Image (cartoon, rainbow over all chains, first blue to last red; front, side, top):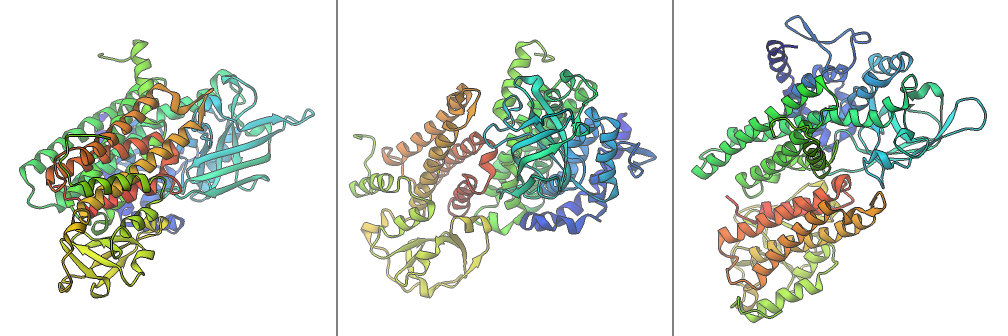
Length: 385
Length: 234
């Protein structure tokens, strides 16, 4: 992928953001209505991103180049501008999302066939179920378990609960992390479909980013066949826990890009709608503009590095820490700038303000990411410093 | 606590101390009610164009609306309800005032006017919400574990949690023991910016739980609504 092609991709994808902006407030109020908009070009485009060429006959084509959203750099650029339209719609859209990375990197051919054919048949939602009510996203300590059933059938029983799972109530298929034994090698990933006996989901109300309808998933004696164990053809060292780390590393810049897209939207909204800025206000906006550039550079460099080496996660951590701080700062400043009642006179500002809190918790909180940055530094892995 | 920093009126100091004692553990709606009922007749405080209140106060025929330095009988005020589903979770409603409103009611009395300002109202409401959230965080993080330790016992968490305590203590100290009046706009905006920082820290500490409506997020939203309506920031 060269710079010219990426620039063309960026220009093309920007044009889809308005459709997301147009439906953002509706979805925020009534997330269930997202299903009414699956025929929009922008939703179709996003729902087919991250589906590889073998299964995807309708990629995004710009100047004769086909884009499948399989690289981090494509994803961060696409996600930034679609989130500029509306981040809640981005996260609530049908398509592979987080579980797509697991399938792309760890699934065998039979599992890929099942997963991608479900998504190609019609716009379908997926889920990625790692986080738990008591353990958060600490993959090492998850309690959901996968236990062998007596006999030689190879079947296992899945029991446990997952929490904060995007699109869990509307998804057709997804990935669940569970523990077979103690220790990091005892973590497995399995492909679970809607309708399996013992699997249920319920919505959790959230302050912002309401498109994906965060949910609680419950697994009660769900029967898992050997064919549902993702990465069964790989050694335990190269699946399970490794899968969780890979997904978080690869998706962190994408979450940062969502926060950046919202920040840019807020910035442009202030520039467009606030007249007669004082000198202080102009300086403040100039400062925000510089922060936007800084965060964009970090995110894109993180993506480029991760496309070369998926273990190189620290730049993504730095990018996400800065992006989530920026989005809160800029949305709260915008409310101050527009003054009394701006939360209600400017519905987009209200939504952006609420959405801004959500990014902090996706793919690692800032505290956890700071530890990652520190450890990378101590290990001598951080370039330049 | 003894201090020689403040030359605040003793009634005001007593009132503020009573507020912190008596509203401890109260929900936002109960705190609104406490505030409203501190006076001869129930009072709803409004900004230039908006007011927020539990319906229980609005439905009381004796309730008055304080706008600027004037008290109005609610029957004389025209207003429309603004639907906001998050405030609804707290059983608090938001209204926009139709201006102009009649100004033929009595002026507030001297003794009440010390407390009956939108500045006092917004500050103590936001402080109470922040203290509630601090308490919520303490309970949540003491009962969640990473490995064998409760999350609240991790150094980074303790550090951040303390930052919230430090901010809150500083604000309360400024408010009660300090001598700078909250009628000073830049000082007042500064106090609220400190509360903002505190709220941002407190929601971060709760991780994913913080964005659920059933937890602190709707209280934090209410806090920012109060700021957005009552505090002149720019």
